[in-house]
Length: 360
Image (cartoon, rainbow, N blue to C red):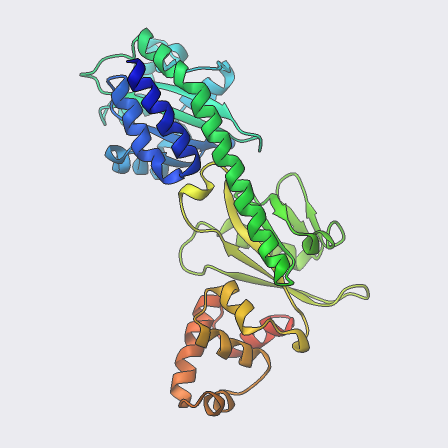
């Protein structure tokens, strides 16, 4: 058992550095206590995103997306208990309560997850990570010695989670500083719209233009703030991946356009909950972003980036076709790809976007 414990500890710290290892690790921990895999949840006012051992892909997808996670009373019970270790569902509910509980009766028991042991680990961000190990009805309840074994792993799980959280912050800060190097003010937002990191250029606009309020980042321009609220609410939707928000000029400030770019991927924000990059682009035609910057901002090909740059300088399709030595239809096809990737529908919208004018 000691050899197994040591091997698991090593795997835990590997997962702290390589988030893709968590699903396999959860399966190994479940096996170590005679269980049936497990799941890891990001917690912020309820369940956030999740990772799970591969054998529970379908079950956990249904739990998170089928309305069950919102009705599950296990998490609030565990948070209220505040126990710094693993507990079983029998530590949180009586047998009568479990039999009457809709989620336990109609979801967990129905899918063979009759018994569970879990713990909650707080993160420096104010969020938490919840780890749950499952056992089937045939495997029986989680025994006291299994809880003891899991409690021995818990400090290592906590440290690995903190490592993953810290590495997430470093990635976030690197993203913001990369934008700084390109001369672009930028910030990284969490899933609730709060600022996780902002570069020095972005901070010059705080708090006069941007305010990191309790609920989310806000823009002092009321119309722009309404668009930002919509963009943040729609981050989880597939399809339009970029929302561009015009901000009009004032006597003290030139016009600008703010891009809300979703952060995609699963493992990288389980521990940190990074959700979007907020990027402020240049606002006058003399300062239209270079083709290289546009390529990085919108994931364009080099050719698409050159076409976008030319459009931003108000060059016509015919002029771009001549300068690139291609026919007009080729340029139109490339322009169509640019519009799709920038989330726009018309050429004039792209011109306005890159020139910092209001989008119609």
